[in-house]
Length: 347
Image 1: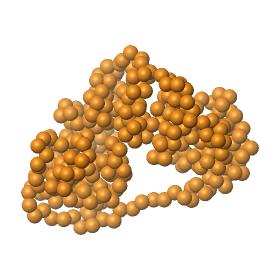
Image 2 (image 1 turned 120 degrees about the vertical axis):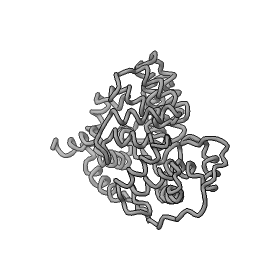
Image 3 (image 1 turned 90 degrees about the vertical axis):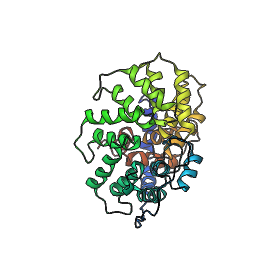
């Protein structure tokens, strides 16, 4: 998707930056000083005293309704504990990001790992990889994750695929990553379906095939997976694997945006900015940029900076502009860094 183009609009923003450079430097320092870090207090892993219960009446997964997962987690269902922990730990599917709560859930699930429950083994793997109640130990984390994946637990298979894709703790191996993604995707696991779509979308270890990519994105998107909803929207924008259809793109961006998915919120903002299948509305664009920017999405932070400096969709405000520019710079956003280079005289 397009960002603010470096045309007359961007040049005017740059000139405004130069005029307001002293304001920017002061505000940038203030913004940086206000950033905070979070830490997690580790506690001892509880020991299992009874077998876990599963009274869900069916298979649980990451996209199972939140109230069902929470009810099952209260019954010590390891699958519910694992999936809830994933959602809280990474702020998935509209859940508030809460690492402390995630740590507690992983540790609670981990207590059942020794009775060969794959969801509990996945919880124990997270405990070792993140240092939740255990001394951080990547080889031990991999051992437990492989145990779970060998029992065809989709959550573990998908995570193992991610590790091979990134070369995290294991040698990077796209053949292995695709194999694990496919095993989980064929069980209907939304994150793996999305990742398998990516394999076809960028070539990866598969022949570039936009039609197949869209097939897997759609399966995942229909389960509410935000990354897939966004990528399906982009496929409709670009006409990759489907006929170009801006209205359909906006539909999928909105689905992701309304459940709090930052990249989808950003894309929806771009649609409102450029009037793509919606009436051009900069106030609405700013609303969605702000939602994404507040979650730390750098492209949205940069666009929000540009809006404040130009007074587009919001009253012109150099202080707010400087704040958002500083946050984008902190993440290494290239266009934001270019603005700073101009402020610093091209250095």
